[in-house]
Image (cartoon, rainbow, N blue to C red; front, side, top):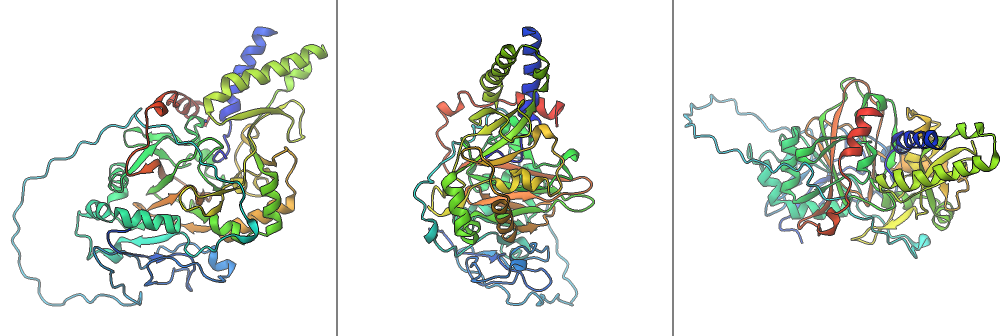
Length: 499
């Protein structure tokens, strides 16, 4: 399930290789955690204040409320340090400012503390871990109820008395276990109005305080995301002007063979002229809201995702039919054996799968289940990138991907999925979609197996970034995983020449 297309990545490089070849032949909490959920919205688009410890899923929330954007007005949220915080029950209540004359205070100036030099992570990140598939024998008729959903909102403005100035790092470190437990319950947490995460160095302090271990993007070699902060393991989050008017549909950051465990998206600069809202949706709620017949059809047939196209129409110019077929087969093998492995996606090269052109060579992932069980909780979730990759949907919304990078989704036997089923998937995904207008320093930490993400189109300049993580706490074993991991060559090449 490659994330947003491979654009021209796989087969543009393949095309160059192919053309060259023809010429020669003539990728338990330590303290209470209290925060406000963003499952529903109050009038005016604000999320209602909650004094509960989790985000309870509404029994029957209207569709309009489910898709409402998370308001920048702030959400009552909190982390308790040793005990449950008392949160104000009304957002209209304001702390009164003393009117008396301030007393004169004399301060002493201490010598500045030495600045900790962080280890440069360039070239040191482990590969993205393998996808954990537990998709067999899922009882679609009896899916478990989803009691808590994404996002949980933690607003620094609600915690200013609990976090002394300059102590945000210590706060995150102290609350690490509670934060990670709540992440497992809700699937995503929005951290808002913190000062620490406004640059790459502070963002790294944030994720290191939570003991999150960074890894490569599962499609690192595709060039979709350039690694803009190698020393801090930071990728850009689809900010390129060429993709500004491209709607990025909901997807997990995964392929059939690789999936990051967690992801942290940070805003360093919102789009200067508007748009670019970050999108999330709870995969557990998506399958619970789907029509059981549609879900069963897709689950039983499985899906295959085509990530790129290469039209080799020059083959028709070969006058001898036997030679023509030999060239087609040779190019198919060449691209499969030489180019495709560079992207580490376990692809199959197939001619004419979409029925548009017998000389169109498509790179297609192997059949996979659209539903998976969460590797820790066992919760069944929608684990499929159809909302992002369906050609039927892309043709009906803003899309700037060239034909060579256009994606599609088929049944496991490469037959077409009925438009009615695709439309139903789209309707349910968008009903559960939460739109977040992130401001500088805001971070969305998500469980990549449970929560899907995307992005709306934008105008002007935008600087969002993301870091992917293999684990929390002790790093995964890296012995053999370091051998054969992708380097930066393809990522750098594609970003400098094709994107």
